[in-house]
Image (cartoon, rainbow, N blue to C red; front, side, top):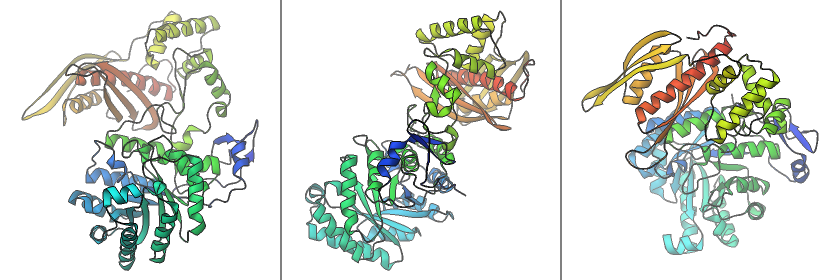
Length: 546
């Protein structure tokens, strides 16, 4: 079952900060002082529109099966309402919405609809729980797009809500482009749909033009006349979607529309992970979201949509809990809250201490101790000096290379446990891609051949067969660095071990050939996983891991 966020009460801490009990979140005490007199709901509902607004991200098209996988993950995450799609849009869209609606999820399943009986009929045919009806109300939309009067807009809105309610649906209504609609007209529309029996009213900042202060005041004004719960739906055109969503809650909204990783048209929507943690950390509000599953869902959506999460993305980015600067590492090793506003495990992440140009002795020493190496002060100083020299020349050191530097300083030699001796791959029209590898694994030569759906898949399978079937490819990322048919590419793989879910290792490689670069990344990742495996087995002398 999804875990509940902590209660609104918070214990005072040191230096103007407080910790939300049992949440591992550390924020400024000034937040508590500012908001303590603000009336807010006990719990905020989360409507996730990754499968509708998120799929409208340019160049994203999800299959029906992929949509179902994401919906099931959102359900397990604890999302209250899943906007599964726009049923009337196409046969494929309707099939996806219907399969999600029939999947037995705990979440309410919703379809987007225009203020049209045709759209609502399409949603009804999918057996959804609710419909999200929208109709533009701003002057520019009414005059330039819809070419109807305000009175006609009110009539269409009322007719659609009545039709949905007559057919037993939960109805949520949005005045599209609400934040550029005259407040007086918004009140007219909201009263009319409320009288028609609407269950919820959404306030969309369709093109992301509000500031948080304006959004809070805007929602507050709407709240004065509201007889049903309010929601907010914010876009990120000016980078304000999350701030505006949180401000909307301050103004009285009891539901927030979000997407995983902030996907959506143009600059995207408010990111689920940022909104949820903001509600919990700043306001102490409850949601149904199991925050420990957020990183997993983020990765799943990234993989299925093909949209990479930027490394410095808040909450779920690769660098969100990574530390390189010596002062920061020293602080985090002493007490995590010195440079982390929340514990990484709270959002399903892990802390990473990166060795690089800005690293100090504490970071390097802690990293080497993980591998059972305890260097004297002079040796540590030499290792740090070499690391900084490598980093300043543009070289990125992984764990295996760090160990090589340390062993060299100690006067010992160490070679990678896994080396690629031979590699061939065959592929072509009407030919099943087949790869053969010869690996030297800690002195033992192993050969393996496998087929796959493509040359990379075949190569990865052959390598796994040669080393161990316990190895799991948890993530594969390919990015072009330069343009043209001879472009350089960077491949990143994340490897794990099915016998120990805590074992993870990254492998990276850059090259002009996608297949060989992928193989090189696999070999690097395997060597790092090998070292981690030895460490987890408590084996500091023998090199045999698989």
